[in-house]
View 1 (cartoon, helix red, strand yellow):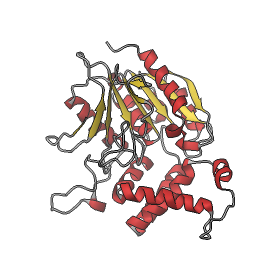
View 2 (cartoon, one colour):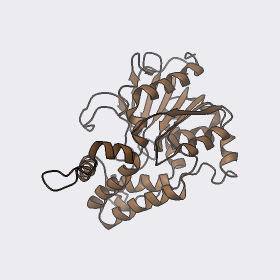
View 3 (cartoon, rainbow, N blue to C red):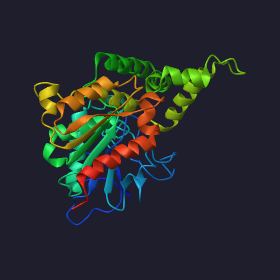
View 4 (spheres, rainbow, N blue to C red):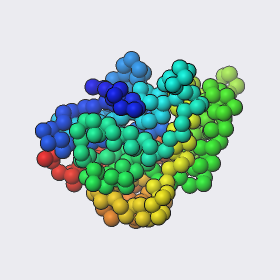
Length: 329
């Protein structure tokens, strides 16, 4: 199922799986990453050229068991898959494009709260997300601690560091020079932070293809071309700026004070080979959240992308989280 909320001052596209129970206590919010969308599970279809990005984790009998849980996945504010974003028409009749207002992770979560209200969900049984989705999941638990019973943050920080902001700014500069070619370049830059040097060396080494390109160069070209076919450059810029601005401590007395607001039972997980959001940032989260019991470590050669690729380990984390939540009331 997918839906929208055209009667609100913004439009929110979302998909759901499972059935909301009578007392609305079994809802789980799944937050997608930067270039993800609401299509968490299910086959490729019009508008979604690939299967769901956590398809192995959502469905009957899976880690997010839709026979028990009502799973909700909204498309993020500023994205390009149905929720209000740069692709929409502005009041002057022209597309918003680069004029689209700057949005923050907090703005995105505030939009999702309107969706929860419209669906009649007062409290989430769980809010889960990885990467940028983990930022929104964390923001949910800090902003509305009474609306989040349990929380899983995977491969995300409390606030983006100077190094991470610099990486985002390099991508934004490429986009401003040329939206289309620039997004291809931005994707190449970003993708290097999503994987590991060891993996790239093992897969490609110094191998040269028949056309004279290095095999690793061809791989990056392929990643850029794939994204260009399915994603809007202006949305990429809006969402990258939102990530750069992520800081749960802003206006709240700092990160420590913000994390102390979280009351949810919490699973914090990081990836041992993540060079984008390294484990030290998840350790900071676990130290600051009373309901967290250390950091769960996903062991993987794939770097940051392990939150999408290591499905068995992520499934175990989800089952641990929901076991602690207990059966829906």
